[in-house]
Length: 157
Image (cartoon, rainbow, N blue to C red; front, side, top):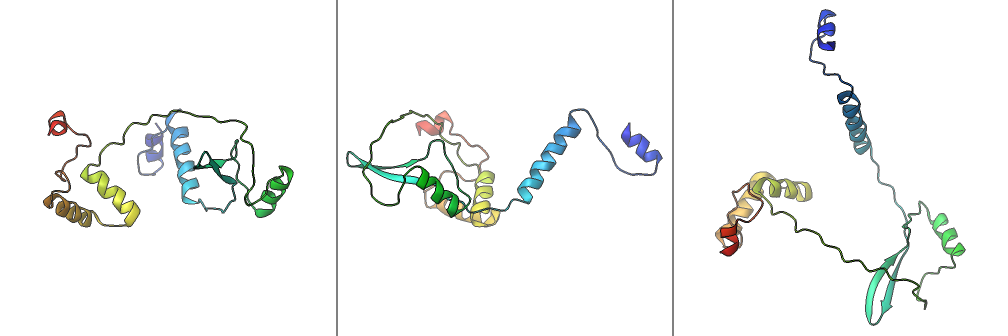
């Protein structure tokens, strides 16, 4: 309807407007603008390196907090009687969780090229040359596949 009405007024193009589509597209547009205009800001956080039973681990605040400036960090530390440096302490509670995560899918050639381009700014042809060289040295399986999983036959092999 809007396309036809706008064409009668001399406006060219196709206009798709709907109750769900328009607000959804606007939400996508807003998020895209937020990403485009994002400016990283430095922050401070508190963590502690803990040595217990001859094992080291890093602990963070619970609930996790970030501090925008050193002044807010200092005032928080003073209020909680926290100091920088070695200090003996008592661990009140330990929360252990067993987490399972599925293995990531294998790279297809196109997903590998995309990932390498994002990280190292290498061209697709450069990635293909490197992958081909690794394949020829028998360090990599067949590189020109779009499949990102191992078949049963490949697994047995």
